[in-house]
Length: 123
Length: 285
Image 1 (tube, each protein chain N blue to C red):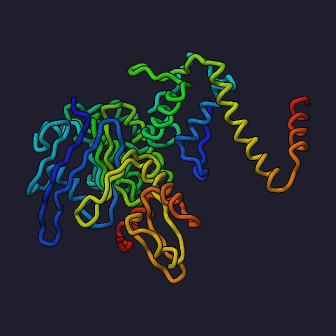
Image 2: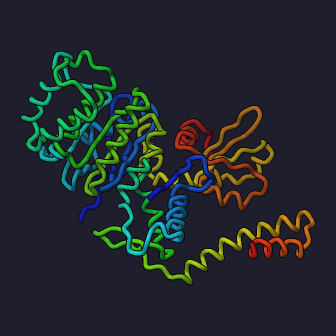
Image 3: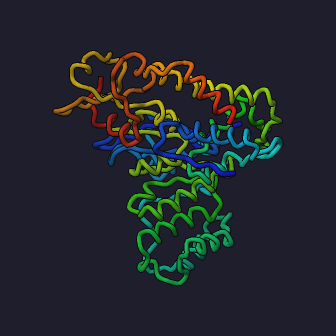
């Protein structure tokens, strides 16, 4: 498992860890049932505080990506495809919103924007 | 079950020119706690009181859930001071021989593993050691009797970044065991910012805050604005301020809330060093 932390990023470190593990799960690098490094090991490897990792794991567990069994560690939860899709849809929405903002601000017609999306879909 | 390795309540100590004023804090198990403050703020006094090297005038200190004056607690504490207190004529092997008779739980194998890892010579007199080597030896000796609690007073000060990094690694390894804790004071706030779980700031013998480090660095912020804008900020919304000829800065506890409340202000992230400087040098609200 590879995690890359940027200290100059605007995103807090726990959020960076959380996002990266999510994408590792979604893209299939981490499979359901696979165990994650213990919080303490990950903190040591990343040279960060245990509490920071703990917070990332708590967020992952809350969002249903991992399960933490006390005394045993954390595991990738059996993935619900609907759930992953929803997460992805949320990301896509955000990006589309950005596109719409640019479109509105610079007077790009909706039709043109929609055609671009269509083109990408058919590519 | 007790979840703290150290519990300090209303600790009081009076010297001629300095008072440690009813301080309270705790060092939870499995955590690294950084202790910051300027020279003379009371960091070393507090550490020496915990170790019962100097006697307290009031309050309570518990180590591993029992009174700190009990002799048995020392067996489980590893201590490192800012100076290597071993005599220059000894070699590392001499020190090992002495300490192995002092601590019941002395682990010779572990000691030799650390010596190997840090590439320290066994048979050279300590007088020929560099500052970094001496500090490594002090830390090895503090850890070779398998303590549950490490207390370090300015142990990383004066060392180069490579050695400091190796030492931070050791701390992180040490707390892989959830029963262990590290309590370390340092002027080098970046070391604490890297690995500490909690941070305690002491100033003039009083505890200013005891906070989770992530809260400090993600929630606190520094507002930068002109004098006019500054006048419009509620005094309740900031902790301390600093006025220069060209701008005014103030430290806020919750930068997102401030961002929502006041439009068009610049808020930077605050480092631990910023936070410490504002508390100590800034004008209060």
